[in-house]
Length: 417
Ligand code: NAD
Image (cartoon, rainbow, N blue to C red; front, side, top):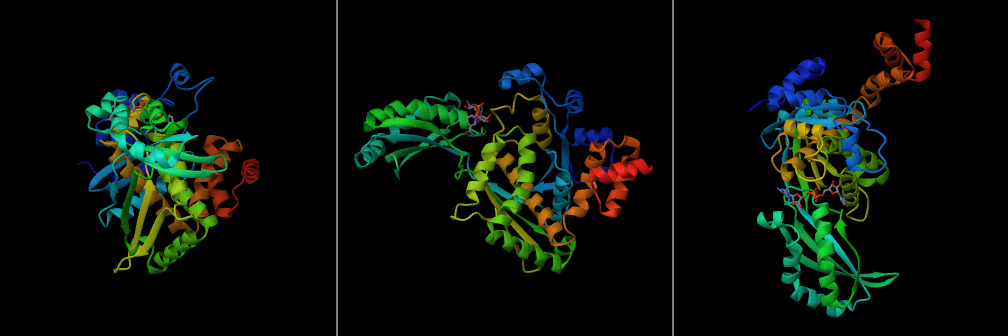
C-alpha cells in the first residue's frame, strides 16, 4: 500500500505534486487533465444544477498528507479558502502516525424521516401506527427498489407526541438505512409516499414530510494519540487540556473550538461533494445535545503523558447520489481518497476534523495561532494590495518580520521598493 507521508510535499512543484498523487491513487491522464482544469464544471453543467446561473466560482483544492486511518493510508483532498488549514491537518496527521494514526468507527447510515400530524387523537393514533408499521415500512420501501435490493431502506417506525402552541402533534419517524448515499432525497420520497397511509390510519392531517438533518443515528467517532514530545512537551500537553476544558465549559470558546473542527470536516466534505449545510447543522445541534453547547472533541492524557483526542460527530455523507458522481473534479477527488463506502468516508472526514482541532489548539496553547496563519495570510494581503508577483516574497517576509500584516503596510513597502 502506498504511503501518504510523501516527503516535503509542500515544497514540490505543482507537476511534482500531481505526479505523487497520480502514483498514490493510480489516476489516469484524463484525471490529471481534470485536476489541471480551472474548476471542473462548465456553464451548461452548472446551469443544470441550480437556477439563474451566470457563472461558476472555484476554490483552492489541496492535498493533506500523512493520514493513516484504521491502518490505511490516505491522501486527502481538501477544498477551502482559508490558509493554514491543509498544512495544519497534514502536520497533525504526521504526529498521530507515530502512535498508529486515527482509529475511527461509524454507525450504519441511518437517516430519520419525519411526518408531522395535526388534528389527531395522539393517544389512539400511536397504537394504530405501531400495529400497521409493517405495512407502512413496506410502502416506504416500495419507493426505492435500489435500497430494497440491497436489503437496506426503511427499517423502523417510531412515534412521538409534541405539545406546541398550535396544539398537540404526533410526529411519526421513519428510520431509513440509506446505504452509501447521504439519503435526503430517498428519505423525503419515502415520507411523502407513506403520509397518505398514515393519515388514513390515524385520521390526522399530515403537514411536513421530510428528513431530519439531526443525524444522530449516523455518528462517527474515533481517537488519535499525539506523542507528548512531538506535541511540544508536557507543558504544551497540559495547556491543550486546559484549552479543551475552556471549550468544554464555555459556549463562546466552544463555537470557535468547533469552528476549527469544521475547518477540517467541511474542507473534505467540499472536495467530495457533500451537503455541507446538513453536516454543519447536525454537528452544532449535536454539540448542544446535553442542553448546553460544548466541544465536539475531548482531550486528555494517557498514562505515558501523551495527548489523546476523541471526536464524535454526526456524519450524513454519501459516495453515491447528489453531485458525487456528476461533478468531474469531485469524481477525481473521490478517486484520490479511495473510500469504498459512506461509512469509510465518514471516518476519514471525522479524522480530519480531529486533526484540525489538534493543530488549532496546539498552536493556541503554545506559540499562538497568528504566527503561522499570518505568514500565509500575508500572501493574500500582498496580492490584494496589488503587489506584483516578483515582489510578493520580499514584501510578505518583511510584513511578517515586522509583525505588521496589512494592505496599507504592503503598499508602503512596495512604494519603498
Ligand atoms: P440521490 O437521490 O441523488 O441518490 C441516492 C440514490 O442512489 C438512492 O435513492 C439509490 O436509489 C441510489 N443508490 C445507488 N447505489 C446506492 C448505494 N450503494 N447506496 C445507497 N443508494 C444507492 O441522493 P440522496 O443521497 O438521496 O440525497 C442527497 C442530495 O439531496 C444532496 O445533493 C443534498 O444536497 C440533497 N438534499 C438535501 C436535503 C437536506 O435536507 N439536507 C433535502 C433535499 C435534498
